[in-house]
Each structure stands twice: as structure tokens, then as C-alpha cells.
Amino acid sequence: MIALSGIERVFHVGGEAVHALRQVTMTVDSGEYVAIMGPSGSGKSTLLNIIGLLDRPDAGVYRLNDIDTTQLSDNDQALVRRHQIGFVFQFFHLVPRLTASENVALPLMLAGVEPAERTSRVQKALTTLGLADRAGHRPDQLSGGQRQRVAIARAIVMEPQVILADEPTGNLDRDSGNDVVGSLEALHERGMTLIMVTHDPALGARAARHIRMIDGSIT
Ligand code: ADP
Ligand code: MG
Image (cartoon, rainbow, N blue to C red; front, side):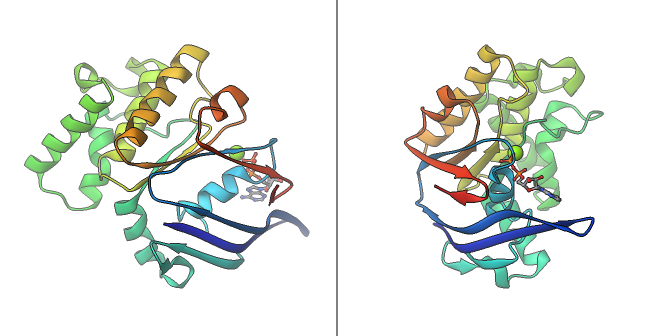
């Protein structure tokens, strides 16, 4: 489903070149549960951003479901991202003045889903994440773990094939972190492909497969 080949990413900062990814080649099959691990600065987020079509490689080919994404326009990439990829970030990235259900509804609004359909899909996603009774709460009225579960509900409301999570527990205490990973694993058990970046070895060990990065390369 996901096939990267010879991916390179170089950032230029004040005349210096930072080689964030070097010749990264990997595949992930539909339904896999993969942990990406490695020290800070090793390129984990850069890799996940490229897989999530939030960033483009400087060289190499990235095929998603046999489509060469590097040939797609920004608009077409955005469409693929909206329908096929759910992204979960370390710092939740919820809109503070919107309620949980309004945050979860955002991708549906962008996709032009009708209000009635929107309401039922938001409710379903929030229920899946055990948040039905928090639908009207704003992020500041929720715990960290609940915020991240709202972010996961938002990530799955379009029913993507793959969930990408970048240090989803990095900002949570251990118990909330375990809840959040449990929620992600439950989605995986229902068939979603799950790729999670973590530098917590105990969490990484739960994945079926491990990809280790050092200095921009997969080891
Ligand atoms: P990790 O997620 O493993 O901590 P990152 O992928 O965030 O690592 O970063 C890999 C390297 O690329 C680091 O040296 C980082 O400083 C650099 N980097 C990442 N994003 C940018 C950016 N937008 N501009 C410049 N350098 C960046
Ligand atoms: Mg990172």
C-alpha cells in the first residue's frame, strides 16, 4: 500500500544543508502495525510527514496504492490526504474555540459532507473513542488524554485506510498514553493500517514491526 524508494529530504537553513532523510526505502502493507523509532533528530517526523503527504521529498518515489504521489499536484495530494490518511500529532492540534464535535466535523466540512450525515459520522467517531459524553466540551475542558482521543476521532472520521501518529503520547502521562495507544490499537484491530512514531521503547514494542532510524537512514 505504501512504498517509498530512495527518498531524500534536505532542509536548507541559513546556508547549511540538513540531510533529514537519506535513501529511505520501505514498504508498509495494508493492515500493518508499524512503530518508527529512533533518537531525536533522526528524521522520524520528516518521514511521517512525507508518508502523510504533508511534505514532499527532494528525491525518490513514494507510491500510495500504486499511485506515484510525487507526480500529483498540491490539490490532488490534498484530496488523497483528506480521504485516505488520518494524522495524529503530539500536541493534538485541536481548534481551541471549537467543541469536540466541531473539531471532529472539520474534515467532513472540508470534504463537503451534508450536515445530517456529518452529525451522525461525528457521533460515531466520538463514540468509538469513548467520548460521546464530551461532544460539547472545548479542548480546555478536556484532559490531555481526552484531547488526543478527540484528535484521533477527527483523524478517523473520514474513514481513512491509514493512521499516522507522531509521538501521540509524547505530551501525556503514562496512563493517558496507554489509553491513547489502546485506542489506536483498537482501530488497527478493525483493519486500519497504523504507523506510529515513538521514542518510548515500551510503546514501540507493542507494534508488530519496528523501523529504526538513525541520522536520516533506516537501520
Ligand atoms: P525526529 O522526528 O526524529 O526528532 P525530525 O524529522 O523532526 O526528527 O528532524 C530530522 C532533522 O531534520 C533534524 O536535524 C531537524 O533539525 C531537521 N529538520 C526537520 N524539519 C526541519 C525544517 N522544517 N527545517 C529545517 N530543518 C528541519
Ligand atoms: Mg519528531
